Image (cartoon, rainbow, N blue to C red):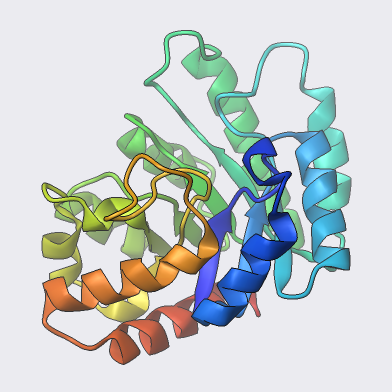
Amino acid sequence: MIDSHAHLQRSEFDADREAVLARAREAGVTWVVEAGTDAASSRRAIEMARTLPGVRAAVGMHPCDVAEGREGEMDEIAALAREPEVVAIGETGLDFHWPDNASPQVQERFLRRHIAISKETGKPLVLHHRKAAERVAEVIQEEGGAPGGSFHCFAGDLSLARRVLSMGFKIGVGGSSTFKKSPLPDIIRELSLTDIVLETDAPYLAPMPHRGKRNEPAYLALVRDQLAAALGTTPVAIEEATDAASRSLFRL
């Protein structure tokens, strides 16, 4: 399995990071894409990829972290994006949920810079879109598209999913797909499994029965198994299709 989105450098893992990765390997996770959220965490993501087996990096600035006066960090991220351990640009996007976030105009400015870096490097985008999915798609189209990527923690309807796929993106599916009221299984049922990449967003969004607790890459097996049950298919079918999607997208 491939965990296409995690944040293992978070302090929640300081006490047992190597053990977490060992459990992931035991569960069958072969790759983890560690997503940066600013310049400093992007540097750390690359260092993790250089020192820990089975880790690759994504570099970017999370929309909850962008702000006036931090534009200079994007120059560093543009340079980091060319490192061989980097397989994607992000986590970037828009977040219209939290009132303390930068204005939509500032967030969009940073997103457009990420799109430019993605085009310059040919590396895909990892997109955050909380309460802003349609606008994220619009900005990408306004910029003339991008070299694909994932709509991380997909939070739209079937119409948006089809729009995203038509733009060359994948749907990021993780622990929230196992929640009782999640619409994701019904949406995925209308798509091809090769349109899906699995992710944990660890330490966030742990799947059932661990909801509300710390998430970790080993729990990707729970996402796979519960999604297979919901779709009436096998865990092997889920794993093979989503792994192929992630390998193609991130060139693993």
